[in-house]
Each structure stands twice: as structure tokens, then as C-alpha cells.
Image 1 (cartoon, rainbow, N blue to C red):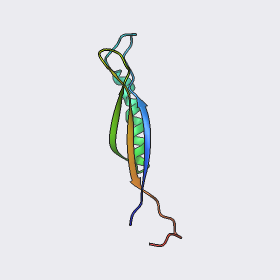
Image 2 (cartoon, rainbow, N blue to C red):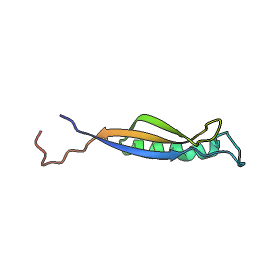
Image 3 (cartoon, helix red, strand yellow):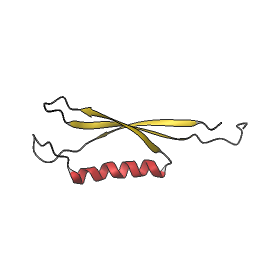
Image 4 (cartoon, one colour):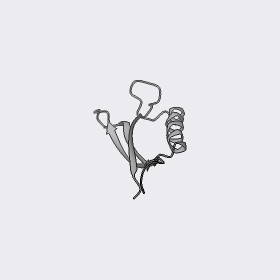
Length: 80
């Protein structure tokens, strides 16, 4: 039976300029894409995202916990 391993990563959502900005910084989102692409190249598949709010009113999503999974590598000595 195939084994699966999991990974959890918190990624922050960059905000636009200004202290009270509620819009995401679209240039900063590219850094999130780069991190997700890097994990994808390592074989990780995104399976769920859990957003966190920053506690302000109205609530804004400030970061999110990303859950990944991939098949666990098998060693040559493992019986199958």
C-alpha cells in the first residue's frame, strides 16, 4: 500500500501600499505563486487551504495555512 506524507505551510497575503489598504498587492502574490510552484516541482500537491483573518473589522484574510500531500518515497529495503 502506498504511503502518503503531508506538509503544512503558512503563506502571508501581501497587502497594497498604505496602512489601511484592504486590497491585495498583486505584485506580492507572485511570491506566493513562486512558492507554490516550487512545492509542486518537489511533488507536493495542494489539497486544502485554511484562511486566517487579521482580527480587523471588516475581517481581512492576512495569511492562510496550505496543506499539501505527496506519495512517500519508498526505500529499496522496504518490503512491498
